[in-house]
Length: 192
Image 1: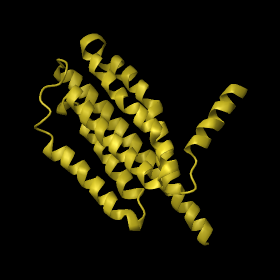
Image 2: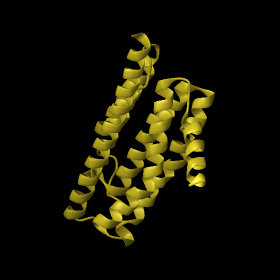
Image 3: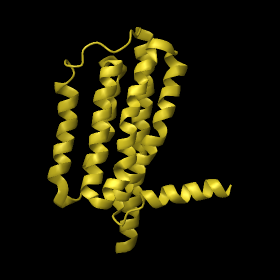
Image 4: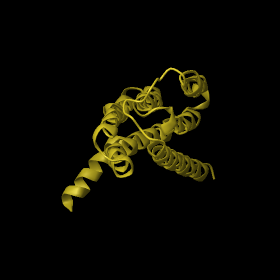
């Protein structure tokens, strides 16, 4: 049990930041990184292994970047928060190429845009708006550029992946919303 407590203490220390928005970005990044291996397991359960599952390992290319968000935040809180959004967008691009547009990976651009909207301070809004705009460009302008997925998926596979991605993206939106709600409540408590 001491090993678990020690590991948890190190993780929370790594995610900590004096700026609540940046601390939230760090936590989001670590939660996403820790869930990425499970995504592959969920896909295995839904569509099977072999050739269909092989492209899922490309989703792990973004894991080091998600894990680096707290490190980058120590150097520049803006850079860390931007890295989180850019890594999410990059992961959506790679994953959409891997699985095809029909898999619904584009839904992950919604939490990316929410993070860009919520985690940048008023004086940083231009960067937030640029990142939100990039989410839109990736969704609308890239749709015809991905080509065929890297494996042959059936309509049933696409339906299963789309459902998984809808649940996952929605869960991430809820998580971000709860973090922001807590941050606002803390800010209200300091003012009142």
